[in-house]
Image 1 (cartoon, rainbow, N blue to C red):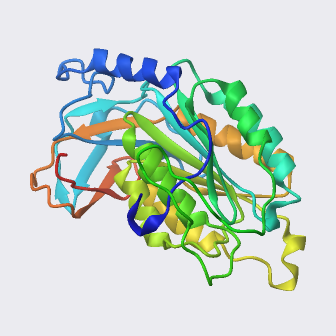
Image 2 (image 1 turned 135 degrees about the vertical axis):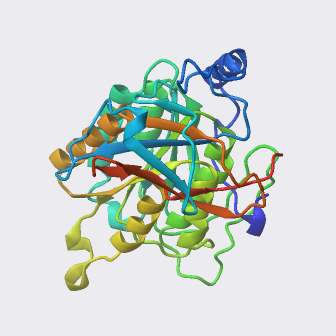
Length: 340
């Protein structure tokens, strides 16, 4: 059981053949990087290397590809670092998490999310990529564990139903224990922060290569045990980029509207993703998924050995700058965790 007693629930949580195949492939590729090759594809086991995946954009948001290593400056806690490994386009496998809000406020947009999200999965996943699906409402449920099978992932998305009442009792992942999400006495609604924490800790934290999560939500949290800062920290420790697609039927909220976008901007800014406003328009949701797909396939890679070798678990703030003045979209730093 995780700290605080929170655990994921759901079926189909055993390691699937696709994941076993990928683990075997990763082990086969392990070895010291070839510095002359100067690419990310061989980098697997050097635990002293810090890795960052990022996008470069011009002022209007268009992606800038194929810049050389010499066009970037890298700082950790304000101190210059030597870029040891670099690639202008990463071909490493993608690990993707889809987190879908199924609380009462999403009832009028859920069908849109399922249809467009399923099409996105078919479009973005390649042979060595894997993904999982989680839904969250008064509980957090793992609907489909890691697989490269888009049909299984779409079936999981289509199985999501709105849930705004009842008791959020959960059973744990194998070896994690189980028990109810401890929100007794707290108004139930949307365990958004708990979902991000659990997806980062239980799922992404066990993976390597490029990692990204996409949240389909209005950004409103109600009843989570974890706070937004806990969700951000968990995603950063799992080296996971977070995108948020703000899907909301504004008519549900009445005069006051909703305010979840501010916390979602914190989450995405710290992890290297961004918030895209979708509302209840299918065409906007499709455009947002298309943008994310393009960004995930246009990532630069930087690897470096920090001048500060101490692994004390503290947070190190990292800044990647373009000498040309372009905007760099990257996570804000990493936790220097001791080797396990």
